[in-house]
Image (cartoon, rainbow, N blue to C red):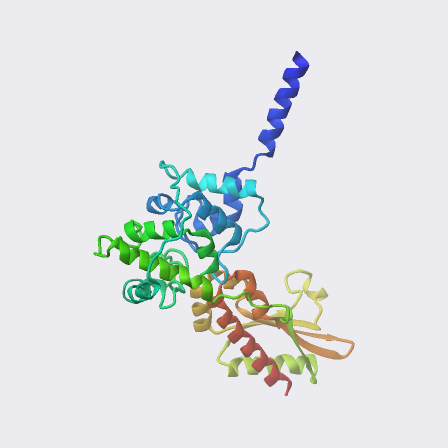
Length: 344
């Protein structure tokens, strides 16, 4: 009997150990953007009562699994169903209300009329083509179009996660605590709202966010220099200034890592910045600070001098923010112009 009881307790303990910890999973995967308590940050606030009371668990689970392609929200495809459900349960614990349940039946409406309504009622926040508001999350120190940014409705991740019934409920009752107001209170009829839902659903056939093929992008940009390392460094300094960038400093690559006398003088790194460009890029996505300010490295090996730097477009896809891609392309153009000018 004791053996049976012991085996039972062991089985229970193993199940308990194996059960995913939603609190820990949220802390490691979600809190950095959505806040420890779901209050928002780079990501939208999740603990907002009107949000939790209007989204079902299916919406949360699919959003976690597939993210928002081209936006800041990544896809956590490596999480198991059990881990995803544990995070959903943790998020749901912020509400005293049970999760809503929506029918999967499509809403039938006039998409063309919905398009006209969208232009006058929705585009101001969600963008003319449903691309979403500019910026991310809630207002911190950076400029945002709204205190809480309107999501991209033409996004494949959103459309995959949201049922027609959920979209209709949001349009009918709005989201208290956000700029989203009830359309019923604004005078629209249920039929008008059905038309809007049909138009939003029509975005599925023309999703503008396509996964960019990054296979052609190299991790670094490398240019050979016909000059000595000393001449190349000086040429780079002049080229940096000519591009309206400020040279912050130049050091050996090993500076601070080894004793000064042991630093390799054939490996030099230059740090520079255009502060207006930096501010604009940080406003689009603060995580871009990971590879700003700009840096180029000059090395000499076997009499060959090489200039190299990280390739910004190669890095930009890691951030899942299509607005950032343009800044990364501009950064690459600046790097190429500086390197070309320094090696002419």
